[in-house]
Length: 79
Image (cartoon, rainbow, N blue to C red; front, side, top):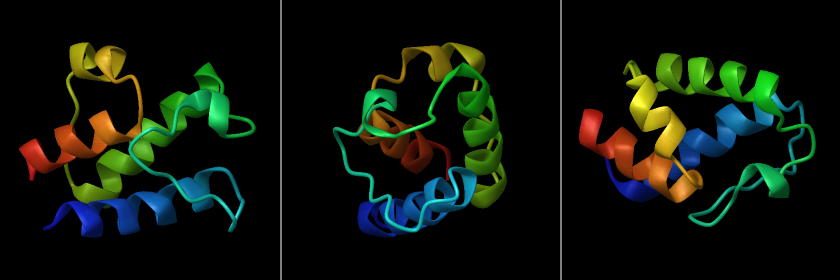
């Protein structure tokens, strides 16, 4: 899977989780950029990303991710 394919799938997950078809994430997207992305939604988002990519993040990795680009990098390392 390429980085672009990861972002295509991430966009789908974000749109579903936040119920907003207009969300487009990129490397620099953070919780501040997405309306409703709070700590509770973060848990839901991580779970949905794990399901979508059939992966499991370690808690230490989840807490270190600063933006969606870092999430994409971690996904690429796990698939």
